[in-house]
Length: 230
Image (cartoon, rainbow, N blue to C red; front, side, top):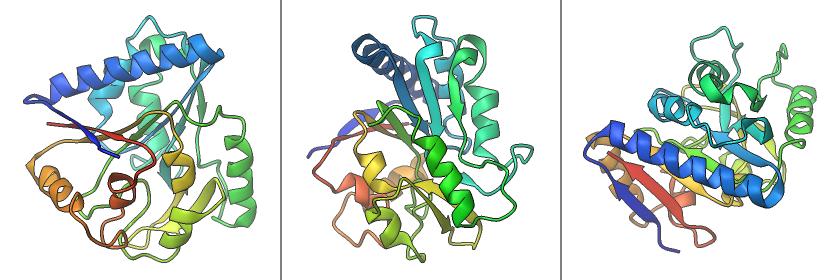
């Protein structure tokens, strides 16, 4: 299934356009089902877009469930916390009434009990997700699907909703699994900068998913990926 590319000369224009597009999808979901759900990626790339999205007054934010595509195993006080980034950049302005479902729940270790608690909480979120927003690293990873790491195959094929996984540098992470992400009604890949565009061009060519896990999304035929880049 063909991916849809949206190119912007300005990253501010991208942020505004993507925020408006996501806002429309959330409004449509609420109109059709009474609720909407969105799973977001962390990092610095989406901050401007999330801030613009938070200002939209036409969304009934009290009917929106917000969660994360993945998270580091860190407390929200950490500047590496994706939950912290979401709270500081999206759950402000008009979006303060949205329901937020973090992945990290304060466990002391990333064991089966902790994963079970995370999975249980995620079950309360409307699925399939109405919107999923992915990012991409220079190594071709997305979510916490890192090249050639242990459990990558499981994360891409598991029937579980949430999994523990280690990044290439050994950092412990929590991620939603591929089957739940790819089942979303609308999937967006948000990338910025020439380096990432070069990585994207490489990933769009045939090759091993293990080497560039973003290919699991880009080269599948279940759902089109909307690629927003500047």
